[in-house]
Amino acid sequence: MDAKIKETLLNPIFKGNPITVLVLGICSSLAVTVELKGALVMSLSVIIVTGLANLILSTLRNTIPNRVRIIVQLVVVALLVILVDEVLKAFAYPVEKQLSVYIGLIITNCIVMGRIEAFALGNKPFASLLDGLANGAGYGLILVIVAFFRELLGSGTLLGMRIIPESFYEAGYMNNGLVILPPMALILIGCIIWVQRSIQKDLQEK
Amino acid sequence: MNTNGNTYTIVYSTIIVVLVAAILAFASSALKPMQDANIKAETISQMLDAAGIQAKDTPTTNEQILDKYAETVTEAFVIDLDGKKIKDLSIDRKNLELQDDLKAQNTNIKNGKDALLPVYKFNNGTTVIPVYGAGLWGPVWGYVALNDDLLTIAGAYFDHASETPGLGAKIKDDPEFRKKFQGEKLNLTRLENPFDIAKGAPVGNLDDNQVDAITGATMTSKGLDAAIDTWIRAYAAYLNKVEE
Image (cartoon, rainbow over all chains, first blue to last red; front, top):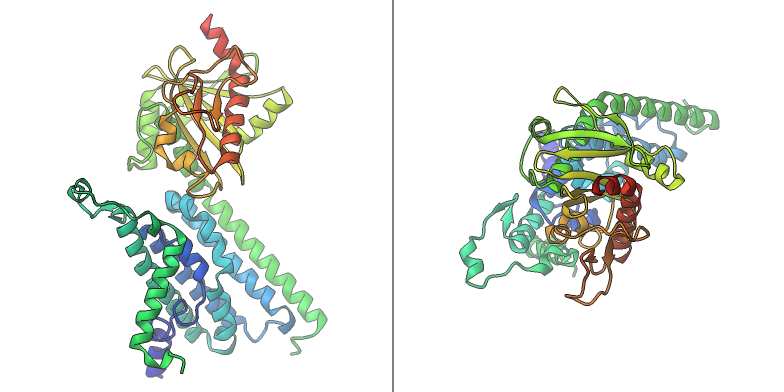
């Protein structure tokens, strides 16, 4: 049992990472990774939503009518996302203002629906909660790695603090404008997938 | 139990939807006071930025923003379309009043009646008035600070609901764009277009009442231009009266 919990928790972080292996949730990872702060808040929001959505739907799984299954899932996910948005609006207004468009889009984040369909509907509530949290964390990990490089190379800052000293700029160093744009996020994710596949040989196609 | 029957499906869906609606209604009303406080502080901080009292990105708490406003504001009142004062807005720190229902007032201005137009005067000699209009994807609004001649723009702050990041969103994110408004003048003799955000005007050939539009954000620039024109026109009676 212990080994199974460990597997549920650790698998989505690396071996079965939702972004790099399952290739879910790519769209939002391109949009919110310009700055580290946005990525952190987004990760936290997704972790909460995937965790709770899995927990609630796993608890209800034997009562949900099969024909309206997806609609019930959507209603629950939408409820959680709106709650996250409202709470941010009350307690972290500047962040919410910056992220509100993307927070709303968590509803359409493939990871949430994907994990509900693939895991929560066939497993016990506690295991589902762990699976949701772990998948959110796996998503967040990639988001933070990408945002780290994009903010550092694109703006010379981390969490809004200047990292690259002024003297570099005076010596002719320039921020890379391309890193700010979404295509570079895709390339960075590509690089991460490359690294992961060369470590984890069994992912490579014959 | 048969969870696939029609009756069961309908009853189940109804219960879920009612339950979810109840939770949302409760959360929304429970969090409303805090959200309103945030929005009020945000509005005030935008005015303070336009008036050149405190830059918007200075890290402060809501309370500090309200303190700063109560300290620096000298007069706040509401006028109508004829420039007549209708009522005062309280500037007491414990009960700060704003007239910030810009959307409703924008409709009133367009209908030509019942508009409640706020005027905020600060102790550095600036008068701040709002503007509101439609951008490309959603509303754009902002605050324009005028010097004591009520013609020269001292500063401006613009905000938007959902303009394109990197293009239309520059009205808020690009300090250079906002800085261009400083020192420009309103032309109240030409009321159909008292101020212009000009597209494609030759560089260095801009009038006193023109700033250059944002490249790649034609619709947002146009919307903001229309917002400024509409609202300045609504304030024209008041702005002219002071001049005489």
